Image 1 (spheres, rainbow, N blue to C red):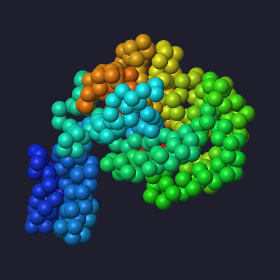
Image 2 (image 1 turned 135 degrees about the vertical axis):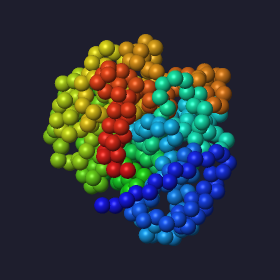
Image 3 (image 1 turned 90 degrees about the vertical axis):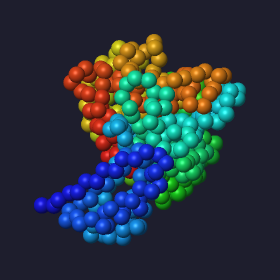
Image 4 (image 1 turned 45 degrees about the vertical axis):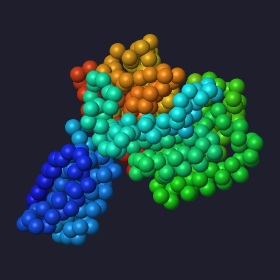
Length: 399
């Protein structure tokens, strides 16, 4: 049997910088017989909370008193999400649309909206940050996806150098429509270069999956089917050597990707079929291989899509934005279930503090969750969806 002491400290800016010393003084000069001391700081973002925790440990230096200390940094009981697939290397986040510069680069603002902090103080947004209606939500982690060797290098650089580096990770791999690069560079040489990036990223835990890899028969004008298959099978060797899971792409392939995965199931540990928009029968076949199903806006376009998503078991569900693509539009069947909207402006009228119309961001992941919850009626709450997907994402990526 152990006892727990819970300390709750509420504050207003700009006093957060005094919190570590104040809390430490209170703890060390008080007589706690508790085995655990839990200190909750409200209004700290995760970055400042982490710093406060380290500062508390440094000041007190009291292992017996601080045998276990946790800090809460999610105000107002926000829903938390992991965006398992975000294309944050896309030129739209540098202000370039269809080859034309429309506005300044704004990835910094996109990430601030995602993680729920304001631009000026890098602390929790208190007024909703342009969010209208719905439930307050925040990104816990973001996985940046790559589709080429060069993108893999850029993704690793991004997640390391971002101000939110402690919450960002990436994949390394070659998208099926880009598998022509294996012919250009030679399969063995290309795999060697990819493995160098992976090993670099494994050194600090930043690379968490192989991908985006798979098959895409909807865009064979970019890469023929045989070359796609060769590129896919070649990349399975990366999963074999590292134990990393697969971030899978499957578009209009019938059972071809499924059959390859069945044949080579022994070569990889885990996998998620992202942006799933096929039948429930195919989904069940993938899940029978112990794979997860990734859902985004492209999975929620039609009534048939919604019927499939409704039947997916929570234990096999993860969600993503696939941003800047796969926004949920008014013409989509899932749109009626959305409760949360964001202030937007067209890219030509860009203004800081506003999302860009038609360009999805990680912050929009709440809309994906709302549609999934909406398909299930009162049987499954939005929080049920959020909690299950968060838990599954942690189990899958091993953060």
